[in-house]
Image 1 (cartoon, rainbow, N blue to C red):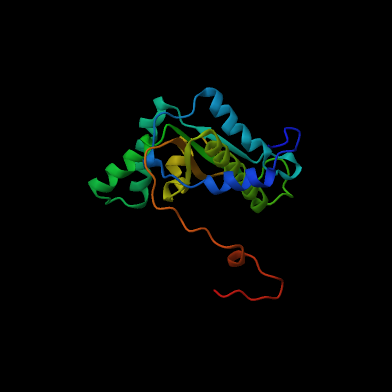
Image 2: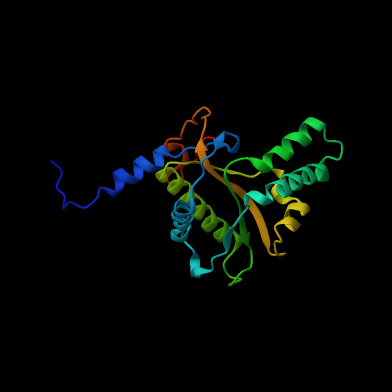
Length: 204
C-alpha cells in the first residue's frame, strides 16, 4: 500500500506527462475545446516559464470564434503576398486554416521590451518554454495541441491584423482541442543524439 504521507514522485509524473505529449495537428483537433476554467489552467502554466529579469517578452493573442473568418482571409492574403498566382486549391486550403481547432492563439515575442541587454535568443527561449508548459498542461487536462508556423507568420498582412508593434514578431500559432484522430507518432531522439561532451565531434 502506498504511503499517503510520502512526497509525490515528481520525476515519474513529469516523465509520464512529457511522454504523453505529442503534436496533434490543427486539422485533427475538434470540439469540444477547453472551457473557460480549463483554459485559465492551461494558459496559466505559461507563467512558470523562465524569464530573465521578469521582462515578460512574450504574449498570446487568442482568436475568438467571431474573428476566425477574418483570420481566414488574412491567410489568403498572406499566400497571395508571396504567390500572386496561387491556385484556387491553395487559396481554399489557406482559407480553411483559419477555422481549425477550437482554441487558437498567436504567440508573439517582443525583441526590445524592458531591457535591451536581454537578447532576442533569450526572449525566444522563454517564449518556447511558455509554449511547452501550455502544451504539457493541455495534455494533462486531456486535450490535443500543436504549435504551427508556416510562412504566413512573417507576412505584413498578418502583422497588421494582429496589430503588432514594430519590435514584435509573430512566432507561431498554438492550437488546442479534442483529438479526433492522430497522425503517426514521431520517433523521439535518444539523449546521445543531442548531448555530447566538450571536444567530442558529433556526426552530422
